Length: 115
Image (cartoon, rainbow, N blue to C red; front, side, top):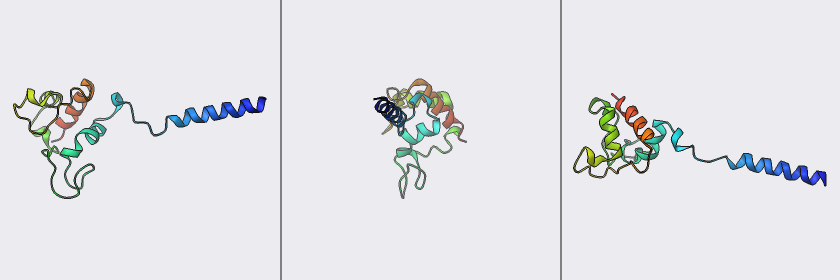
C-alpha cells in the first residue's frame, strides 16, 4: 500500500513539474523585443528579419530608426490608439485592449531608442 502511495506521489509531482513546460511567459513580464516579435514584426519586420517576409517589404513602415522621428510619448499614444495621433492610421490596429499600459510604454520606449 505504501508503495502505491509513493508511486502516486511521484507521478503527481512529475505531472505538476511538466505542466509548466511550454507555457507562454506572463504577458506582464515580457520584454519589449518579445512584444515587438509577437505583435509588430508581422507587419513591420523587413525581409530576412525574424517575423518578416521572405522577400520584399512589409505592410507597415520600417521601424529600425523610428526614434529619430518620434519620441516615447508619441509612440505610446499611437500604439495604444493610432487614431489619437493620425486621423487615418491605415492598417495600424489599436493595442490598448491587447497590451497593458506598462507593456505599451515599455515597447514605445524601446522603439524610441532606435536611432
